[in-house]
Length: 81
Image (cartoon, rainbow, N blue to C red):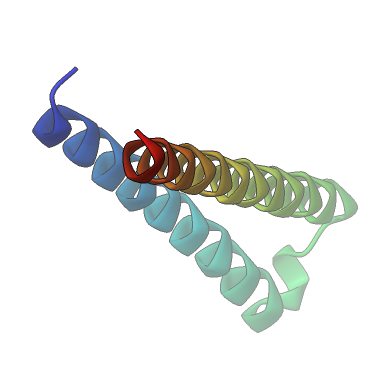
């Protein structure tokens, strides 16, 4: 995989995460502004969506950390070699 392809994939991943996060924020705003529509089922779905967004964000954070570690290791090996 070329560097350009990897960069585009990562940008796409972050972009999709931002869209998903925005959808959940919209759901929160909708339910908080129209409490008559706020059924227990909708609150459960919202809670589930918020949990998914948090897990995806954590996975992205872990991915960034792993990539950073790999880059640091590569730089260290090049300096030593």
